[in-house]
Image 1: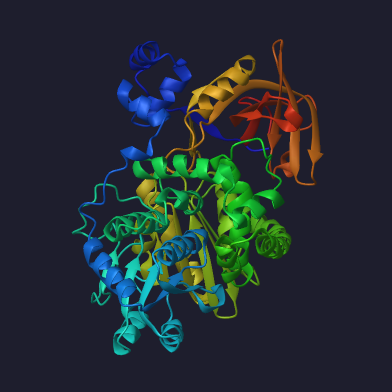
Image 2 (image 1 turned 90 degrees about the horizontal axis):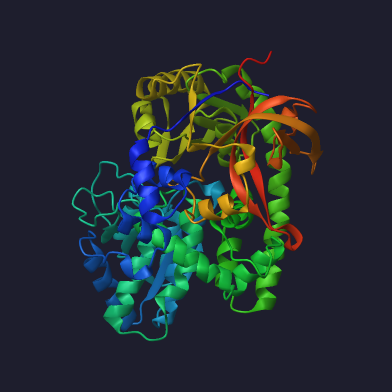
Length: 564
């Protein structure tokens, strides 16, 4: 069990009381809303009930009209269009959005996604393969911005490329026919946080309007957009919040055969709406598994499946891959946790080892962030090739921090919340030293790092009403995290390990009693009769039809003043 400092986020308490009276919510809820920039009553109403009609039109998106012109011409002229997505969930769902929409508009489409073994992005060899299949136009999803070699190969072969991407833009010659990326300096669309699947949705909706196509309702694509947006850790605010809110409704309707099969394998209740946390922990890991361990084409084929029989077959294959991913992940986790412990008081954690599977390092990095509340980079080395993933806590822009350490890296890319790196084993020590120094410079991180909480509550306050009201702030994700509550002064009345790696706690405080689940924290069992504080999320648990409030623990903390 760790010692960890935490404190309440600073909010104007008078404003909390005033807003709570005006909007009819608990002071705790209004405190959270205020801390997230929601201070106006009308704005809170829109935040709590996002409407698809409120997304801003794509006016100002750089190169949007140029892309529309080229796609329009390709469809009218009967050209074959190659669609290529990255191997993660954003890339796969972007490829699915493009393929489904373009086929509905009458286009002939050849869909492909990247293979992790070939590395990130669009390789020149794939351009050649598209050319051999007669493609005169390629549309990329979640990659392409920095794939200069492939773009050059396409130009040599007379193929136009429309790039849909949201990663940082490196210096270099612009040779794509059209680049739709909100990070361009001349892009005037006001929201810069769209994932690639969200950009693809905008493009296909605009193309539908231009073609006056009636065979596709663009809203039917939103289940894919929700999954890709949630998985890619882009901020769930503004347009992303609206797209995900609407997309989860579409996903909950279970109309797409591939996702219906995946939802069934994840054993999500048929009578319950699918939440962002379900997507994060039950669906996207399965979709990601194919790309992590092998060929992400399996995931794309599942999303494109048109009948239940084919969808069930593909979903079963993906579930097999996911179980293998879980086995590998647990092995790497044990080794990575041991490697990280000596750095637990450093400003950041950078660990790597020969043989760590490069497909699971992103998951391991995220779990280490949860464990140590520090930015983390995890690298898996395969001989002289090291590929890693970086994840962060709030307040640190990963891409900017990695840019400052670029001399110690081969390649890097990503965005503020998640990034990828490649490096040689000989670069590891230099990179670690540079990254820790840069994080320290940017955040002032010290051994006594503080976790910010959204509220402090007594155990007696954790009830169904509280869980339901906080649930109205969903969908949760990057930029709108689950409300983190501090529940101090607890006594464990019973502890037990469940599922081999999770910890179940029975708690008391005064006359109140409650329960908590600590996922992946079996090694932190404090034992019966321990005095603890919890930093946790208040969940509404509906197990076997019974509704109850339960705490989902993020940090289990030794009570201040207790012996170590």
